[in-house]
Length: 489
Image (cartoon, rainbow, N blue to C red; front, side, top):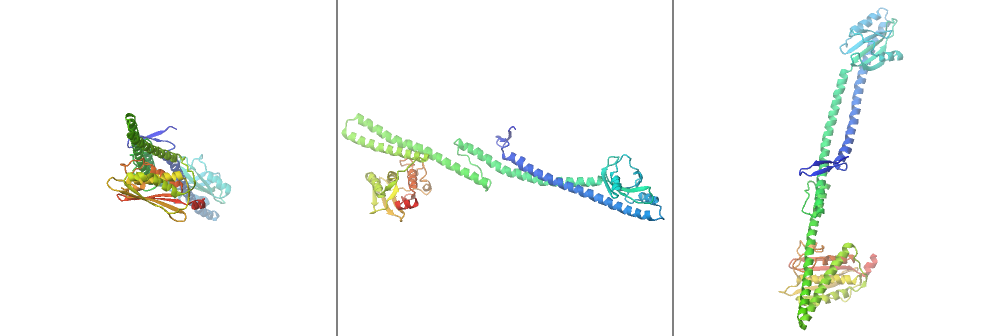
């Protein structure tokens, strides 16, 4: 079957094929509905026709019973001339305007009729044959010589006079058929009145599904091409409306992710260019000048910027491993305080240069944990580096407080608090999202915190962040103890 096309309000062609919802509804549900109504209408029409025909037959049988009963009395009365009484009864028949009464002789010929016209001999009288065979009522439906539909009932009469063998009544079925036709038209009209609202409501219902689906289809095609500006209007609150709302929300998230990705690329490009520029500049300076002090200073800058580049590349590699599911941990029993203190030691000198004081409240002892010491040290370095980066200010001394404690029998808690710029309430829920940067004036790729959160999650711990803009930020790291890890496994 060839595809069919219709044109929507925007002049776009839409394919209407066997796979479409409209096609399936029209040729499946609607066809079944029409079939059911057809069967019901046929049964009702048959029942009505049968009722009227049986009623007519019973009416004729009653009339003929009355006539033959009277004639039976005449046949036994010696004072009555049976032939004369038969003739008189036929000629004076009171219902001759709608029923024809006939007298049939012993040879099976109609000899007297209430209308005065004898039927053609070629007209079948099966009712008479049946009556004579069964000695009871005989019935026949057929057509007269003028092609009119009739019903006939015959009944034999017994008499010493053998001139008459049966009486017959015949009635036209034109009025009955006219009544049946009227009832048939009424039933068909009722079926149409039932079918049309169902068709219109069904078309409207199917349309209410198809239209949003077509809009969803058009929108998703634009999303696939990178255009996330399209939004689907929500017309209902049902499942279709919820689907449209979810797709719109997905578009918002994709648009945000696309913007963050572009911003990430721009930020990383800038972050890579800055140390590369510094390395190149100092390398050219060292090469051009033969000054020992300048050489030492230049080498120090080159080493620092190289470490910065190395850290950034490592973050990118870690993020790529997480995305590809290849991020693994080298698990062992470790002293978490040793790793935390190593991270603090690494940043103590940097904090002093940034006019920042680090206060570390070290407990005497904490339970060992089961984890990857290098990855956990990476998390501590990232958190402390962020605290220094977002709290340092040339106009005032910043303060960072680091605490480690046992939260309960199964968990330890490490907190890093600063009095820096803080994070706005709108940005706080997205702070651990990949590529997201709350403060674009600070260096960084925007994926360090996402990697740190993934590492803590892989240790079955939690990384919680509390922050208030212009007040400061508190990062809380909760990790299970070695004993708790063994019990869980």
